[in-house]
Image 1 (tube, helix red, strand yellow):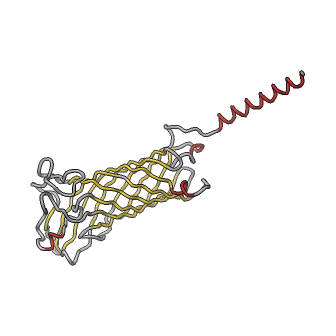
Image 2: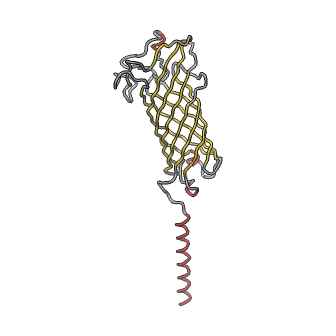
Image 3: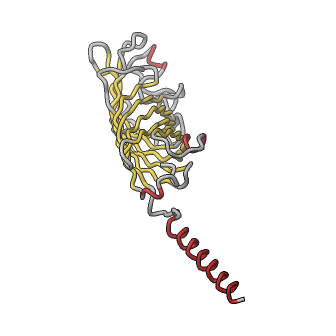
Length: 261
């Protein structure tokens, strides 16, 4: 009887130690852990009536990302850059654009979603978000003479989430305000435990036809700025970009696989 009693105490003691060890060493979810900061630079390609690349313009992204699970994270991105289109033979003009914006997006970790193992040096991600863009575009002819601009002494903002319509706000803006949808595919390659090489390919769809400062109306009138009401009811603009940079993860090593970052 005494032997059985001591055996039971021994089993309880071992079980208690194993339980404490599991609590001590099992990674736990923490909202204070699991952030990353990514800085990238790239080249934008205008999608519009005036499209292409000239003089290799640059765009800069700075992204703060918070991991919520192994498959999902959230991203806040601030961007700034310039875009120059090629000299278009149809419109006999080219565009110079400078812009900045901010966007938010949920991010899916494709590697964790599709693969069973977690120890991959290369991880890939997909995101679709929404952002607010401010830009100024000037359009020049082949002799480098100004033809038209998106923002002058009389222009106003296009209403949010509308392609065209009566302008809003005070006249005389320099940076027009537009909504855009960023769609991004990116990959990280681990260089160090928390430092990664980041490559990204993105397409950004803008809610108006302003980004290149040109609409089909300019085929008949190269100085014409606005279509019906405010600007144009024609097809939307956007831009592609390819970027490369570095990502640093602010995360404890024991949590590294619990996050989507």
